[in-house]
Length: 211
Figure (spheres, rainbow, N blue to C red):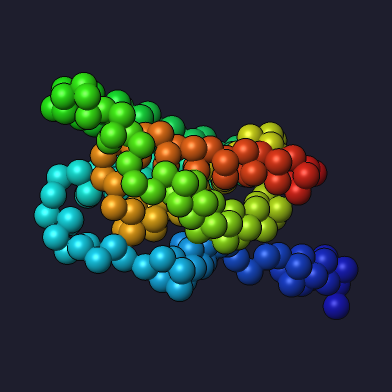
């Protein structure tokens, strides 16, 4: 056997069978499933889920959290591949922010001022702050694990976006249980739960994603 042929065979055998993008999508899917398993074994759907689905404010929570998770996951994938651009994903995050601002403005316009604080505090603020990170731990672990196979130029920031994605995944699941549908509640308490995971992702990225 010629030396060149041997080198070619060794290189082919050593080449990864799956692309990083494929591995990342698989890890993201596993994280979503894991969060769902924790959701159904700990909190479950709200009793009036079908009734709430017919109201405008309940679906709005998913209209905010799902694109947030998708956009953050897309930015994370781009940051783990230095040559890739985040392109549309950053605009998805901008669109989510604009939708949230519009929803909050509408809520403040519709509700009398004396109801603002009641809607903001809601019924389950403390439970929300505990449950969203709990549901997001699995997705964050899956993302950080696969990101170690990438080449992020900014490990901490990449981890932060992974934490943002994981937090939004946890918040999406939690939204199916949460009885508080006010955009004011979502803007404050969901955001705090997601922020906690963003900070956890930043810390994890700095320690686990360095080259």
